[in-house]
Image 1: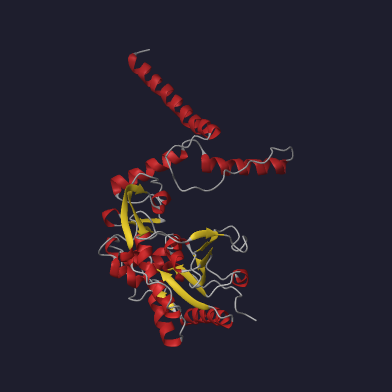
Image 2: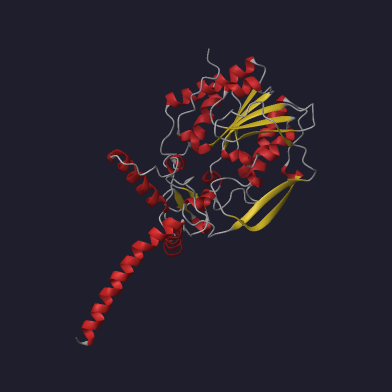
Length: 382
């Protein structure tokens, strides 16, 4: 056997060995739960495998469960996902997940996720019927609360692209001039007197001084939340003049260098590959609000709910129905109410109104959720 044949045979053996190693490593990694890759978006708890069983049906269930678990958690899966994401990001400037959109100068936006692109490009304007539905449900909630002596404020937190459109990709154009929020505000001004707060206004006014949104996250930072709080407190003061004036100048702004990794990084598979400054705000005087007990711990099922209290008996009490955007706003807003209860849900849970005495209800949703129909609860019916 000549040297050429030996080389060919050796290469064949090497290829077989590499193949065997390639299929064995994921199995070994799966057995020992070796993932690698740092922090990525979690899918929750590991799937629990059923007993193997003895009947064909039990065997079939075991195989299906095992296949689902292996596909999600085979060895070094996170490391491979991270490597793929970093390669696409560094070499081609694109995200490995179409749920994430890469903009200019390192800005990340939501892509094909929760219909965010359709909303941001104004591709699906409201129909007349949809606007009437929003008017009906907002007025129904307002009127039902009014009968109980409770005031109602509806606030819309802005999408990131509404405040920072300049960093969107060049191809990202808008189909029509008005967004759904623009349509809703105009319609409600012309046909209703429900109090709606457009939080885009204070943020657009404040964006020149300090970043209001994280580059790598879909949410505003604490400074953006502090700017948005100004409009909410201004509206509250129109009803309760004894509430203190809110000014962003009352807060000390600081940066924590390279301490933040946004949700869009994890969603795109980049994990903590990129770090940006965290923006922190603290009042110039000591905080008064402390955590407090809820009247009922089952308000919102599995979603977070909690309460705060201040030793300020002349201030009003508030119940807030909110989404994830309000997390940064909660420690700021709590300072202006003697009791504040926060419920993470877009509809109204009547149990909260019945069991938590309050003077005002604030409902907050993020702008992109206007792409969906309003949450149809039964509050105010009957």
